[in-house]
Image (cartoon, rainbow, N blue to C red; front, side, top):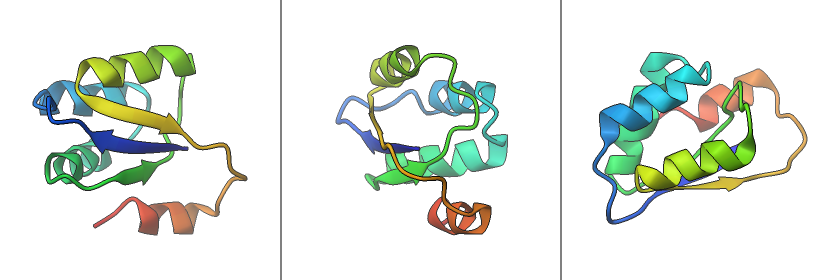
Length: 86
């Protein structure tokens, strides 16, 4: 689970969406997350496949997104869907 925040330098929206999709987040959901970030919203999302947390966090940082890992118990899928949609 990650809390994502856009930094003032965030402009690589397409690259960020593809990076999330490569980690098995549905492309439509990845696009919604990026749009919310672009609108200066914070987004909490569970990224299904993180190969290495440091690599993911660094890549998001390169796009101007602060990725903060949240160590929590798994929430029900329904709650995740609600939390990650507009």
